[in-house]
Image 1 (spheres, one colour):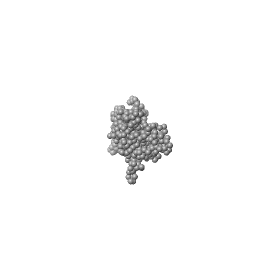
Image 2 (image 1 turned 30 degrees about the vertical axis):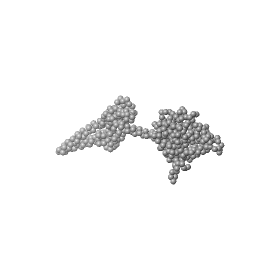
Image 3 (image 1 turned 90 degrees about the vertical axis):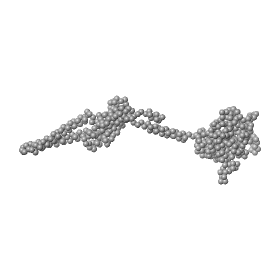
Image 4 (image 1 turned 45 degrees about the vertical axis):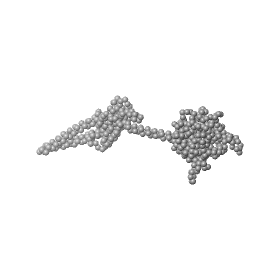
Length: 538
């Protein structure tokens, strides 16, 4: 593009005319004062060359359709005081016109000078030259006459003859002296007339094309384009607030980065759901979950002087909250896959859906809505203190046939007061009960930035895993969440960057919710014998 624009620029031609100002080569032995005067005059003529009266004469003489002001921008003068040469440079878009303008400017300057033909100074100079010629002839004649008289005086014998010759010789010598004095005076006058002389010494020929700087323009344009592109990239990087990479997430949170989850798509069948680690165990998406799960297991150990504390030790991390800053952070799907990965390693895992505003965990395993966490908490608020725990106050653990070490606690009904339920002592007691029944308890919760109960719930577990969605989660929000958790002395296990799509819409048909699981009469699901259908790797 820069090359094409540069090629469209018109070609400019330059022509130059040279003038000599002052005594120059025609001067009769000019002295230093004459040369100084000529230098000052040359500067004056250099300024006159670009004045409106001079250029108006040029425009009129050449019948140009241009204003003197515009013509002045095309003219440059250069005065060399050492050589008394005044250069008139003209840059124009036509080679012939450039030369014509340069020559016409020079001619106008000559016409304005005293050396112009027809001026009074020129006429006076002509008269002085004639008088000098006449006096030089007279001096030559007198020299001959005196020489002749001298010869006659040498030959004269008579005293009278010698006296006459002597008188005449004296008179002629006096005439010669007067003639030479007058000649000297005329020479001085004639020499002064050459000080203010302007003469063209070289006319301008056809103008020569100037270097358009095409390649330099292209190079500079390319460099400018690179600078602008770099500035745009840096500007976008500086002003953008979203997190796109694991490095950006680690820098924003200042907590361990557990890994990135690979993007995957659902199959063409709209009613197929389930953890990808089971449906596509060889896929990159499944492998990314296994990688994060491995780091999550290592995070459960605490390094002491005597070495790593065992996983079942009371000091190890056994209850974990998995949540993000936004509702779209896909934490239910992530928690479901991580729970399967942890169960596959041999640990007993209980996965709890504490997102009571919008419980979705049962969709990930094809379990229809049924009694769950909210139901158990509501029942506990009804019983008296000291009353034994009954089945009604115990959360419903749904085992998974294809993952024997994994049990699910669905969210249950959507309560009117999820905040009161989750921040109550009943929730703390329930977590302790689940902790005694499994090696690891994973809890999904509502977005940390939107619901206060999630922050309080985070303070009741051993650690929190923060989920951020690539290209969606904002740095400012993540920092706000981390600061809030740290203010509550919450242990930050690490962060996960999710490249996955949003969870499938689970509010359509019952078949989508059950994922093809066998349904008993009355609408309940036989989770013991359930074999889910799964998403495929993209």
